[in-house]
Amino acid sequence: MSQIAGRFARVEPRRRVRQLVLGLLSDLPRKNCWTIAEWAGDKTPHGMQHLLGRAKWDADQVRDDLRQYVVEHLHDDQAVLVVDETGDVKKGTDTVGVQRQYTGTAGRIENAQVAVYLVYAGRRGHAAVDRELYLPRSWTADPDRCRDAGLDQDTAFATKPELATRMITRFLDAGHHAAWVTGDEVYGGNPKPRAALEARGTSYVLAVACSTEVTTQAAKFHADALARKLPKRAWQKLSAGAGAKGHRFYDWAAIDLADPVPGSRQLLIRRNRTTGELAYYRCYSPRPMPLTTLVRVAGSRWRVEETFQSSKGLAGLDEHQVRRYASWSRWVTLAMLAHAFLTALRADKHARHPAPDTLIPRTCKEIQRLLITLVARPVHDTAHRLGWSHWRRRHQARSRTSHYRRQATVLRRRSVGRSGRVSRGSLRLFWSR
Image (cartoon, rainbow, N blue to C red; front, side, top):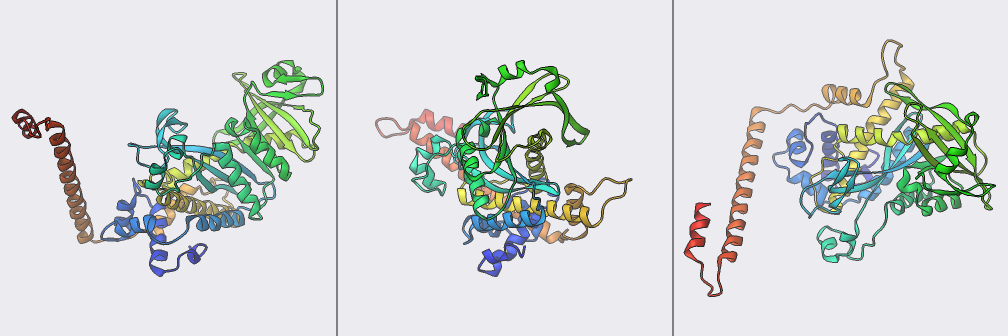
């Protein structure tokens, strides 16, 4: 917490943010301002809500501290930056960025909020270092809606590849180094991120669709047409990295591409050894790289899925119940910080105290369990628990009364005829309900 303490001018928010981050690391079945406040010993959730909504501190500055923390503890000269988006299914239409859209979390079109994340992946571990909320055109075209959500009225629409480019540029402009960038077809199929990376001399391995047109020394081809022309000897069996059940072996092939601009460009093709399914990647590096290096970078893309799963399962990344943009950015930044702490502690443990052959190395989940059990488990008396039970019931009673009043007002307005009087039948119907 000393990494970000300077971002809070007063001691109260400094103490509160520490309690919130510890609450995010706790074993609560559901993490929000109510549950974390009760866990931390507060009498009401107002303090936590104030920290996320109205307290004076800059989430982007904390994000910069988080990025420095991750790079310092997971430093790797051959680190890979992975870009990807994830969605959180939401109800209603008032939460910032929400609309019906496809999200991989649900595997279908849902009412969801989608954000793009940048993950730093090295040999010592992987953690998210930046985030950008995706705002659909239905939001950016409605200035009043943006204002109500705490956004500038002139907020411009940005595609997911543009958000990814913005985060990568921010990472590199801060003086940090990453040897490679990788991402899926959403980012590889857009020429703008590739052009931005090539202009900086940053290498990449980005997935593309089978219909992507590439230029070889002979002619232009679609990626799938080139794959069909490859002889059997062009394929090599290589591992894309170690998984939970062993190494992920695929058949790989690389084809040199022609381009007048300096640099090495290749089309990398992956073939599933069981199903024969193919995947394609456009690759760039200032100088030629061996196939094993390209395969290693392509395999790093799975790190982002592991990061999402761990951040959501251990640090409550997707459990925020906030509507405005400032509150969203503060919650996800602190959740990223909580997960980065577990990752850094895990990397340090592995380096200082390697596990014997009879044990697997400590996982982030195991470190979290030990942390909460041995260090940060608060003990509250019966009065504290009963006080929270009373507060919750009172709040729910007020909400119920408010809903009934709103319903009665709407029904009364609908029942008023042109004469301005309420019909007896409408009143009878209302009171029967």
